[in-house]
Image (cartoon, rainbow, N blue to C red; front, side, top):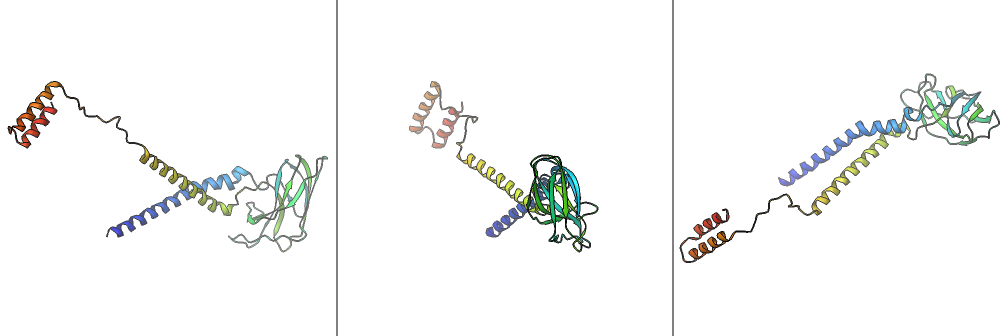
Length: 246
């Protein structure tokens, strides 16, 4: 019976822990990771530095930094899923300075397909990293035939958040686990310190063992009478206690 109660108690603790984990994951970790790691509120839009139609050419004012270049388009009939965005073989990009600045560096870096949030595009995919050495105006030329691939294709120039949206729940779960580990580690450390610390009796009253001469004489006389048989053991004990209590 006791073993069954222990099992039930353990199952209750596990259920309580899982409930607390899910609650913290939903209420705290998901919003934190979503906003700080994957939201355009913090990181800006993926096309914040400009868009260029494919094919097409535009002059964009680009800052001195490494910029993500995404292909964004509409995939007819995609539904709620996010199908893989295929890229044509003739997809190209050239970026040249307008005012004599240093030439930027283009590095291919194919990423995974993600959702795009505009009226004309619903799907995007990272294709290049563009390292701009000096801020200024640049002529951007995009090429490629997207017939049969999708509609309204564009190149987007901006910053992608460090955490893709699809990975937010996973990172939130890891953050929750980390929080649990820190909390229980701190709790165990405090518990260990309490065991190791000596018990303080500074605030506890210490009974005084000092007695005056009159009480000492009375106790001696009482002991002599008890030894002569004048008191029973019970009477002697009661009388002795009465003297000690004043």
